[in-house]
Length: 244
Image: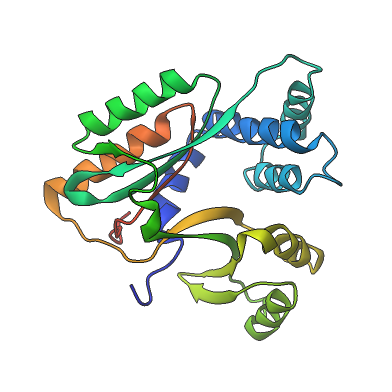
């Protein structure tokens, strides 16, 4: 949808989880744990861990929590293994939904995801049933301010590998190829820009509109998914209204 903020698709998720900081820190802790398991506990040599730590700091997660999560994942404070799984399905009236989870019990989480979809007027689908409607992109947000020169930011973003940059709703939305996400984020940070948020996200190619009860049902589904301890991200192609 032309002119529609790319961030609008996940703004609803952020506003909810930021109000529940303890749960947000738990989710970020799992991101750190997976990153350490895959690439070691040194952020200098583990770009995935650097990204997870950057997310933690953007969420104002205390350094003690970050260090504890790294040690736990490295086996110094216990040993829990999390598995990354992506679920796809449909919400009310065919809204496409992608759910990314980190779980230590695949069977339990699968059953709970199916239950949430079924109870919310949706249905869990097979892998690939909706992901073709989304593009996987790095999305970096920088809040607009009087100190930022738009042309200079655009030039620097493109120099470090960004694909595109737009100003929408007071936010500079910088898109990257997923493979270039870390280098672009780090390049902008080194240039002195404060990153408001950064993640590799699933962005819908087109949005659908719902009204009334169907719209509320879809929001209810998103909230139930986001409140689940194993869920890291929820992406959808519902066009959120201005109040959301």
